[in-house]
Image (tube, rainbow, N blue to C red; front, side, top):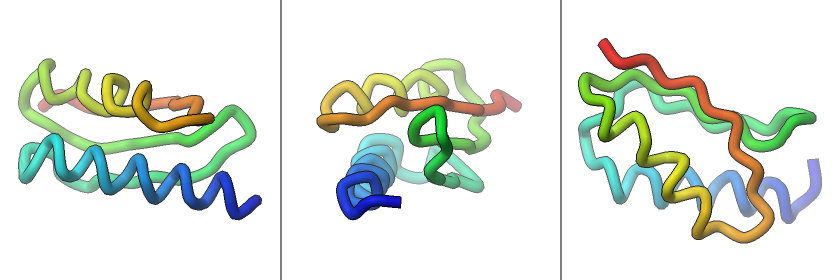
Length: 70
């Protein structure tokens, strides 16, 4: 893992949490060969879409998401 990858993952986590507040549970951000993988649980499809939207604002991030709407 490069410092750039770690920095991008942390920035994404910070932005997702700021944007979603307490509407996500079990948020996980990890690096994978495909990109940065996020996983979480939420109760609305709108909140499900936010990590993808936020990732567009973080340079050099390829997001692979796995969110469950309960």
